[in-house]
Image 1 (cartoon, rainbow, N blue to C red):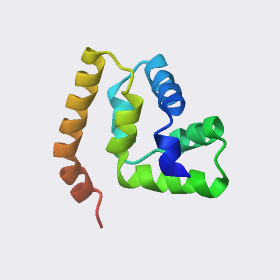
Image 2 (image 1 turned 90 degrees about the vertical axis):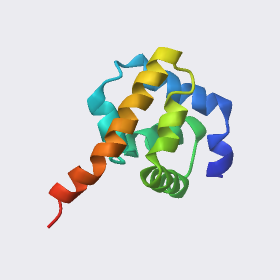
Image 3 (image 1 turned 45 degrees about the vertical axis):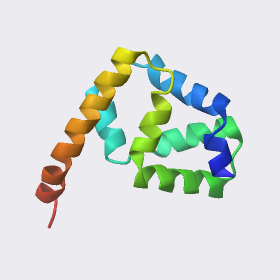
Length: 105
């Protein structure tokens, strides 16, 4: 099931390579930080031949903990890229309460 899929080195490599093949930018990290993970869950599903239910479970898991997905995406990153992305992530963590408060009712 999903837990074993996440430990599959080929899947991690494929997702990481896909993420790193694009220009990593702040907007992409911000989107991921907000839990926009559907595209990544779909990519994992295609690669690992997950059922629709497994893909939904994976998306829910990553929505609840997008940092887990970030760690997978950075698995093959060079040290500088990983540090830059993780530093940006920490900034987003610090800023997130203000974003949530301003978007409230």
